[in-house]
Image (cartoon, rainbow, N blue to C red; front, side, top):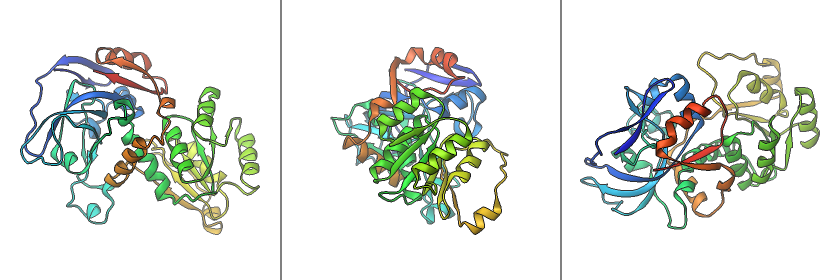
Length: 340
């Protein structure tokens, strides 16, 4: 079969590899669509030992397709089923799994290989994080389940309630998913960004207001929108130290800050400890997803609750993936569907 393999930073190639056969508990999926992701672009630029493992490595992690074959012991899934697979599964046996914190599992099984004609889904993912898709849902839409699960996770952990005012810093793909997850809970959402076109898309996704400008202008506009006191909750969806600080500075007294965007290892930020203490701020990191949120994401997609057309800008064939990454890796891009 044809598959895109990662050989090192800024070196991916379309190659011929043996078509895998599913082992016990596994399934083989004929990929209908895979989606590009900011994490893939980051890995392309600089490599990622944790995500990719030994090289050369299969590449891409958001996929949906049709089951081609099932391994011994698989009973819930049959050949011909339309499915979406998440990119990880918990081990069930560690300290964190025992406490329901599957996203922090010490032995989290990560999975790649979406940019290929076929993908062998490991038994642990088949057990926990493989879901049937309804016939009405396009594979491109179904492949959104994993990033949508991350957004639903964030909204749930922050306990966002109907009528609350929530600000999101950043107007990228994850911000668009957060807008829709938060609006689904009845929140009023504001998005802060720099790119006018992306802010316009955020409005179409469900944001009540979008704001751009320097930090003082943004702060004044957000505070005025949020009853003169500031948002109940602020989501940082960029992953930079300056926007983490901005998020903490924007939230109202007694408010919550979701540190959703991941910063580089070793990043440090100064925090006004006096304000955190005396104004009772709640700062919460949110990472990855769990089977619970993946299941909810598939349900949201199946019910047509996600404006997927705002998230996927185009489609390309598998053969174009290496050239596309080489051309676009320095930009922040909307998702593109890879159609084998």
